[in-house]
Image 1 (cartoon, one colour):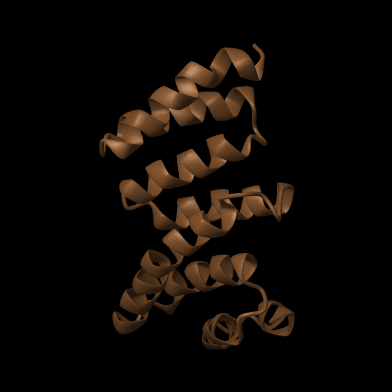
Image 2 (cartoon, rainbow, N blue to C red):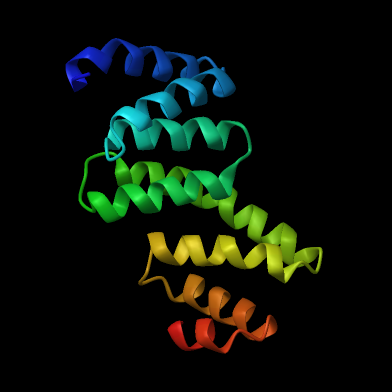
Length: 140
């Protein structure tokens, strides 16, 4: 199936996401991803659908995949920015609950999306120090 054949499905998935039908949108985006794994519009859409379902870490992982494939793509920076605040909120909530093990994946994902951010690097470093992960500590 060519990308031209999937355009109506992609449009439908985005419409569902805009309507708040995130679970339905995610199903369509996942099928579209199977057809076109590196398609930026599909990855961004699936990330938005996951985020709408509260699946923030999964959304971040999709954006990391998108960034690795197309680092300068239009719309990617906005998608990353949209997911950063919810990710930081979850990171902080896990830290407040004393769950460094659950906070660390958020810090790591945010560092992957914003590698030059000193705050995020320090957060990832501190998490890995607390978890006694010397290999990860050396990376940060």
